[in-house]
Length: 263
Image (cartoon, rainbow, N blue to C red):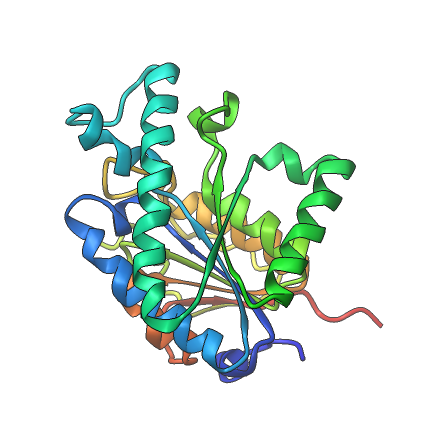
């Protein structure tokens, strides 16, 4: 089926959920369990679920005795190396309650832009999903160069959604929706629905996240939403604590219509 509205979410065949660093690291590490609860509920009803999770660098920072995100590439890579291992262990610990096995998939955006690695990634992801494994995708920060400084996992999630033909992409962060201006400003109003091709004229979209450990903000999410929508996936942007409601089709967040079906 094609997901055209929130009413279709619960019956989606294949979905991608992306969560940001600030939502699952530091004082918010406790949000991993309820996030996994929501993913497991979708998995139990037969939906094929892929999680794109940021957080390797942020998770590794305390173990490198770092109080803030490092600026130099080598230390970022070191933090990612330590943090990626710990992050996947935390997810698997939470998934054990549901007898779901996670599969780690590390990619860079360039892997999905070149034919041979793209086909390899697509084949691997399709097989994991057919085996009822829950792939956990992250950017390969330990070897990334340009991407680790300027990239973001919102875009990676959109490319993954396109790669596997997902019907829905859910982008989670610490803000519950897109607003007509930064939500802390007076007069900001939630944008509930964005028709396909809507340029959001007059909307003030911020370029940075509210927390200091990630790289994405509303601007990256809108850009990612357009990539996924153009590829035929509906997109929902909302806050991480609302993920269970989001995957149940509740009237929350900001919904982007997918491109009309061809033909």
